[in-house]
Image (cartoon, rainbow, N blue to C red):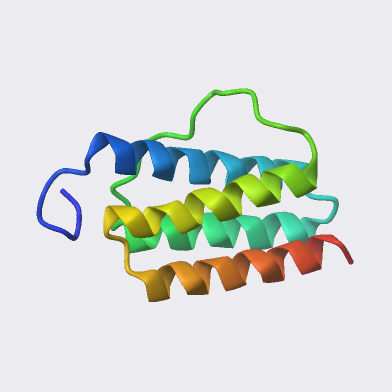
Length: 106
């Protein structure tokens, strides 16, 4: 059960799973340990705002380009606003994602 008092709708679950998959791929492909850890922190925060009631990370083949993974993660996170996720939380997660990207590029 989610913080909204009902089971998560399929569109929300799919968007969240996509965001989680992009974040996991970014963490796995990060060029630095600090970058990988920072991406994992973004993933943990995304899970936290969903009360850890989250779908499994999909086994889909994702793009290998860090820029495309970042764009996909950003888009999926922004799309969560359409599913009732608090926009302030999402803005904070996007800021964390930007910080993770900067760390990974150092």
